[in-house]
Length: 175
Image (cartoon, rainbow, N blue to C red; front, top):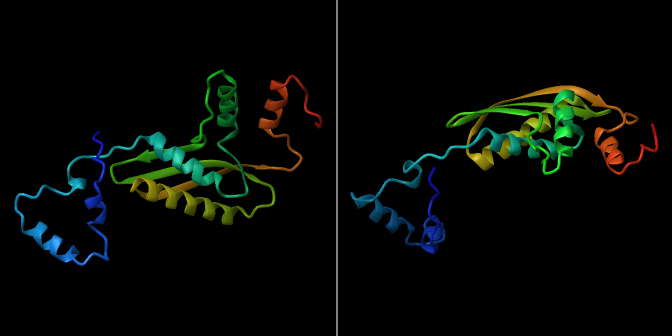
C-alpha cells in the first residue's frame, strides 16, 4: 500500500474556480503526452474490514435511541474483554462488514431503548452509516442490514453499571 505525497500549495490551487488561469493550465496539461497518469491510477488503496466496522459503529452510536450494539452474546464477551487489563473496548462490536474494492455491505445488531419507533430509528441508523462510510472511505454502501435483538427497558439493569459497581467492590444500590 502506498501513501500519496503531501500536496504542494500549487496542487491545492489547481482546482480553485476563482483562478483565471485554470482553463489554460488544463489545456497545457492535456497537450502534454508525457504527463503521468492521475494519482488514482497509480496504485490501490485497501481498506481493512475493521476500518469500515469502526466507522459504521461510530455512525450508529450517533443516533439517539440506541442502547447498545451487538447481540447479548457479543456484548457479554465484549464486557469480559473490556475487563482484561490492557483490553480495549471495540467500537465495531455488533457490526459485520464485507469489503470489496469499490463496495461494502454492512450488518449491524443493536439493542434499542424502550419507546423509540424502530422503523424510524432503523432508517436513521442506515442513513447515518451510509453517509459516514461513503464519505470517509469512498466505497459504495450497497446495503445496511439491521437486526434489532432486544429492547432495553428503563428498569432493566445496564451491564456497564453492574461492571462499574463490581470494579469498585460495591453492589448496585438498586436491584
